[in-house]
Amino acid sequence: MQPAPPARTAGWLHRPLPRERPHLTRCTKIVCSAFLTLLLVAGVLLFVAYLAVRPHRPRFHVVAFSAAGIQPAGGANAGVVFSGQLSIRNPNRDVAFFYDRLYMSVLYRQYGAVVRDHDLAGGAPMYQPPKTTTPLAFEGVAVPAGPATADMARAAAEAGGGAVEFTVRVRSRIRAKVAVWGSHWHPLHVDCDVAVGPDEQLLPEARQKRCAIDFL
Image 1 (cartoon, rainbow, N blue to C red):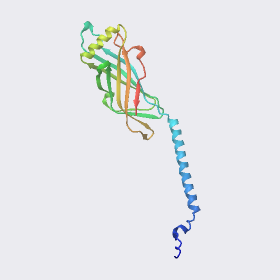
Image 2: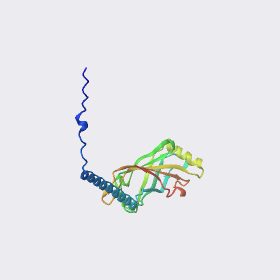
Image 3: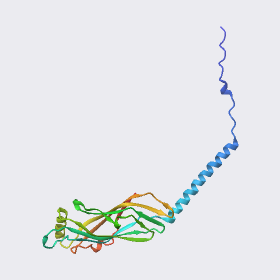
Image 4: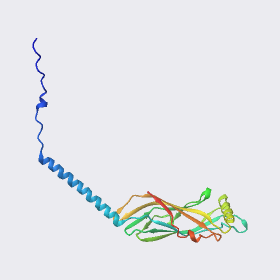
């Protein structure tokens, strides 16, 4: 019996590997290094710009608030009329704010919104420059007689010189502007806790109280 011929090894296994091209490897490293350096410099510049501008949220405060008719004369429940004023402070040095239409609601206990979506600022969008304070007044916002106003009268009578508490809620959309750059619109929600005393006026401890603000 003749011996079996030796197995042939594929020719491609014996082909020499392609030589590396040093100039291509060097160019790739240079390009990658330059790209990473640019990213680092851009990140540092953005961080420095952020620290320089240092944007802050607007600040809402309740300046005045009254609930006329909350203690009806002779016990006759004829409804309640809300009036008052909010202030918006832009504390930023270089950031301006644009507000879409601003809506105000007044919430009371389990009755929820006894006033819903009352237009502030004349129902028009508003621009607020840096380092300014803008007043937002409302007057004669009436709540007709009903279970909510009757409960307000009972609460005022039971308080015996104490406080009847409400929540003033403001909603809108907001965007910031720095020089020529402007952000996208973001939903804005503000809650202000207020309390009126026996004279149907805002209690001193609730005046100028900073409101809770939330926007994304």
